[in-house]
Length: 329
Picture (cartoon, rainbow, N blue to C red):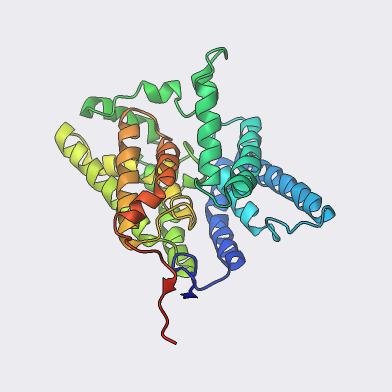
């Protein structure tokens, strides 16, 4: 028997080069976030990166002192994960929350998963954020748990997205003196995830990164296309501005940024082409359902849930193990 490199692992480049390409692409939405929001965005990004890299180098030093092989010989993978944390944080998040998510991500879901399970089952940034924010939201002993956790924000829970009249509040919320709500959602907004300030910029940069780093484009296409179809169908059924519906459900940071930079992680998403299409479709269904019930950042919850069942998506079409074949001697 001869063992070959599994096709989902071999992407034509090294892991470090893949991470550097991803980090380079993320500098664009990071720059736009700082330009639009100012020092608050800069502090969130620096806190997320500083926290994760500080813990990474501490563990790295301990492993070297004990003559153990470093889990991450270079800082590129922790750096990318830290940037994803920073860019996926809501604008209104307190700094301590960003630091907490970053620390949880690197300790538990980056190093911890690899140590205890030998592989990653869930996206580290998404899992850390979902666990901490949902956890804070259900801590009833806090004075304002929903507001503290952010993911079930009281303002969001008051929205009515199931009627044309209720959806009109989205128009008022995103409209500015210079931009309509539709243009704001696509071009320039200062609400939601830092990485989604400009949905159009993320779309362009994400597409270029997909070609450059060979991301799992089938997940991206099936996710965004399904979201657009569901939004359009809901708009036609309930009435109102259909294009605004599509912009709201597709170009919010929790969808457009997640589609390119979180939902395509090689280890926690399906390897088969059919599995990737089904994964993106399922992610869209779960995310859209959560959005309709006003959990507007619920895409990370949907992603973590589907990450756990990644192997099931592959098993739908995979009938024999990758990487082995009989070789005639």
